Image (cartoon, rainbow, N blue to C red; front, side, top):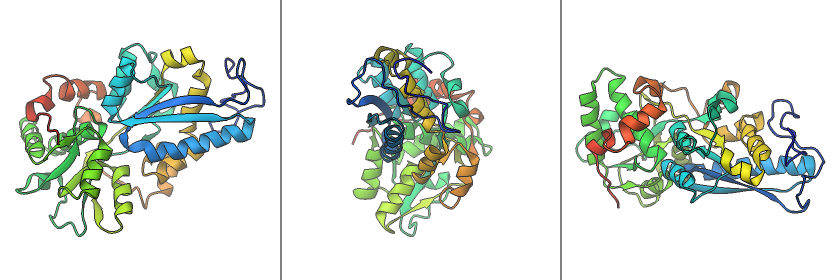
Length: 343
């Protein structure tokens, strides 16, 4: 692929989306690092720290070029809104839900057909929502109905701003309707769940700190990767409970066409995202507690990422965009069962 980066040969290394030649980029100072901004969701700091290190090392080794990847993290839906408004100007987005990437498409910043531009519908990894509890699970929390027993205090982020918060709501709803309950029962369960939350923080990491560090609440409803990190850092004080059923979360990635066109970074942005689908990138994904898209790599990490019963979004909505409208738009289901609950 020619252009601003003739030294960047996306297809040159077998199965890997990044390779570099030795030709200096047109109109670039060969000693100055080239930068990308990755706008991501809240718990991916560690994942992209490791991805960025591997990617920049690959580029430096193959071409002698220095690349800098800058990161921005926050609640996934909040990040999407900042990017759509121009307050953030990402070259790439790596957000928690396909519907958050679709926000930028609807604003004309990402091209039509964006999900088909990368493997696996531009979903390099998946995840789910699990429970984190105190050592020994003293409140005997094993399934979704346990969350609304008297006296249980639930820590979860706000579904208005957080991908974790949205997925928690969808998982809770699906835990009712995929097991035979009706929508009225699911709505009542969601209302009860939020009644058990003392507050709704704007993003996943803040909720995790409240639970794991400040020791507030009986259970934290978390991304699986966040749960693994919290338990590892707690040194025996916390445990993961996998509920019998939860949602298949499908974080999605895209380069932001309008921004990379202005900066001349399109090839580099594409190569960076394609690296996520390489064997090296997929191993980094798995070691950070995300479920890699490549089944053979997921299988190698089965001890940490066990097989689960996960329902797809199509079990509770037509697709992710329909779920966004049905649950999270103004006067959607979430607005009928809870209100903002700042700390």
